[in-house]
Length: 381
Image 1 (cartoon, rainbow, N blue to C red):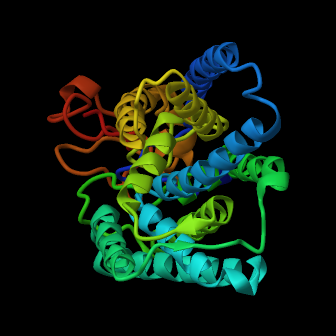
Image 2 (cartoon, rainbow, N blue to C red):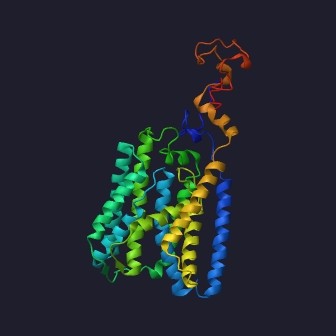
Image 3 (cartoon, helix red, strand yellow):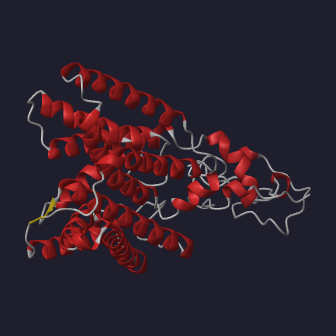
């Protein structure tokens, strides 16, 4: 009797992919570790400054966390799609400069234009990545450098923003956190998880991954860039100054925080609360090191985030991939019943013409289960 396909695995790669559900325990444990570090740093900061989490100090932390969070969530979205976006920092810096030049027009108009332009840059990057099938890091880096060229021709501007985000700092930070967690929860659905990560290479990285993977990648890069533009406008409105800056440092912070949160550098895999916890950890860490005069700059936190994040990627890829036993359930989607797949003498099994009664010894097959493909259709390499 034909079996009903399991739609959880509809986006699996039957030849090269990893059928089955990703294991999430490694993400849970990593996020527990991050939460413990956040709690520890928060205690140290509060011990040094009893008013660190109240009044203007709290609003400053929340605004900084919102800016870093929007860039980090944008980076995580692109990473999940298997197409890292190294232009998030320059896009944020360019959006901040654009808002400074047009602050008199109010927040809504300038923010809308900045987000639209940012998304447009992301679409152009995505079209280049998908159309030419080239690494996203190279295409996005080129786009980011192009934005830096434009910014270098501009002047630093001090301005009075028509909008003060300070009183709404909690709403901004809560919105960024809610967006990150909501997107991550949707990503727990196996079909969605694999759809989003469809661009992730599974064999030769130069092989095209199909039209579906291309569309998802373009959408992910557009969303990533739009979030970066939002971060830039928020950064400019809270500081009241914007100008040519090292946008690549913002990129390093965003990518570093996303990796630190447990998003895999290879794509697809990630947890739920990791990015939010990593944002909180870096934001509190920056405030604490400034308070005690340690002298760590943003580059130090970016380097530390990337370094620890790469360790997290290794753990996620090692302990997050489906177990071998999980393959049995998803094999039914791609192959017929094992009873209809007898082994042939030295050739590929003929699933349509071999008599059902034909049986052979496994050990007698040349190149049997120890070196090739057995009658289950499962590679034993």
